[in-house]
Image (cartoon, rainbow, N blue to C red; front, top):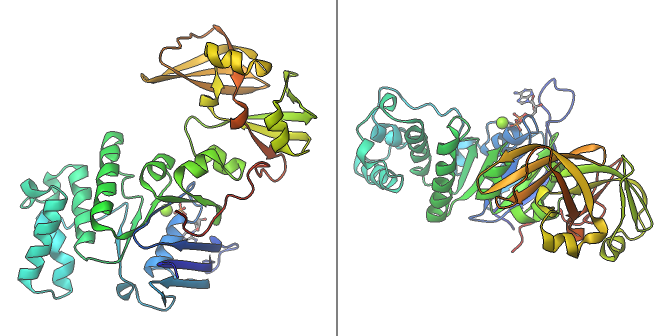
Length: 375
Ligand code: ADP
Ligand code: MG
């Protein structure tokens, strides 16, 4: 049995019309770092709070370490939780804040000191141990909140958007710190975020949700390269994947503005006879403008005029109108183009995704959802 197991978990809040979480099935291995990601309101916090025991599970069964916990009190579930709005005690120093929960648990003072010293050390808070929260930066305060959770030495760590209140630069450095902490402690971690970059950079596996329903579970690159539907394709990756309304007839693809080219044999084979109106998805980095690719994939060569550029430093995003839509190509910093320039580009055949117009499912990858952990 997996370390944490969700069996058909559902949640309907009293008085609500529809379920906030529906038929949630997932197995989590011991020591895994799992991210729940999805837009605001998709049910991430509700799911996390059901694991913690703060919210009643209205359907299904939840197992932690082989034991059904639906009716187990929060304090007996072996979990520690860090929230977005962690409240530190303003009148207490860093070390008192970190040790407070242990004192409450009636742990002897010498043991508390040992634990607090260990947490302060691991979180790099040595210089600040006697400061009060108001004299700490946002990142330091967040580390104290983490310290409070890790001293409890629990089997499962739950974090609900713990970095949302920090500025962008700090978020990046705290991401690395939390990953490092996870490697050192090895606690099974579930991390909730609406930020796909956090999920991509930190998690062993990502659970992507929409409207209370799991859309896909997989390693970051599985979701990036093999999204099961248009929602996952659009949610993961920045800038967003390009989507075009197209019609496929035989090996011919036609865009809404009449642009057309012949699909390569490999793509036609993957489409396995699917024809008609569909949505083509392709990431910005898979629209190529360099000489080698222009030659290699010349059958798909197209022209457009750049309408906007985003200079990122290491690379550039070039925006243009194509196929009746706004599109973006991500190119290296050496491929210099300006607004008004005409560009030529090609489509990398193996990176083209085709989504059903009605169901938005990916024709080429319908088999990627895996609720079980994989190596
Ligand atoms: P997320 O954390 O992904 O933003 P939530 O789990 O907070 O989403 O919310 C999921 C859905 O459940 C939303 O539609 C929200 O309005 C609803 N919801 C959350 N908490 C409650 C509650 N206490 N009572 C009723 N509805 C709630
Ligand atoms: Mg939430």
